[in-house]
Image 1 (cartoon, rainbow, N blue to C red):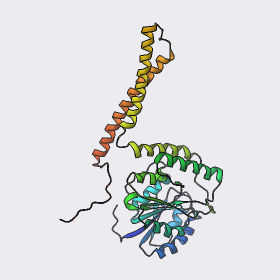
Image 2: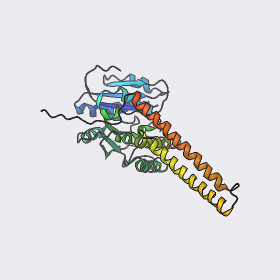
Image 3: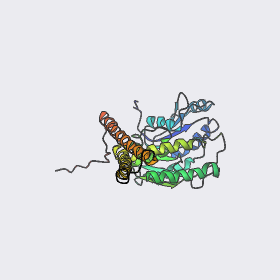
Image 4: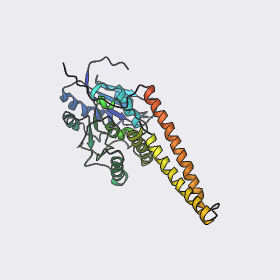
Length: 320
């Protein structure tokens, strides 16, 4: 991508899917807020395969700050966010939903918080205007689970309204449903993260794209995030630990059965414990082998891309 245009200070990235009733109202609400910001900005709408007039309405907006990215089909919210991040030119990138539930008036507050030295400022829908049993309650459980597993505790991982410094967000590669885990993933890079309450409006137009079927995908992606955060550079330490544990248990079982066979003349051939011991031995060997293979893949990944296993914040040299 070749971005030779004037320097952009702020990029607003808005993934949209069938939001024809909302996009023009959102642009009208954003413009006065961003004009008061006093710095060059851009508004990037990413159309994730809409089947209504969303793209036509956005492309008809007479505003040079508006950019429309149309995906060829529906790839999902994470992919749409990733496309917007890739094409964003701002030093600060703000993500928000296109359904008018996020309030543009919160943007200056996010920016003010970032000026305190944070790399990420995450919105918290403290007074959330959604159905409790289908949206709020599952979200509370998910937020607790994500915080417990990743160690990065936020009240509201699912809030799309977040501000990122480009140096943090541009280095992340997103897949599946991982957009909600960006603060946790960024923590691997040593990003400083803050959270602040933001306004949340009830949806007035269009239909929610959320469904409870996403919970399964989120849980699976959470396991991936945990592995990436803890073991991506040392996979043998998790698979090897499981393998050694399993092999040790299997060895103890087999030694016990051998002891009672020779000293007490007990028939062990049909005992389920023998099968369990053999199973634990085989599982231990397989886990250790898997760990060694994962170790080689991990090293190949980092070395083939000349990718370091560290992230430098700054280098300070003192003049002699």
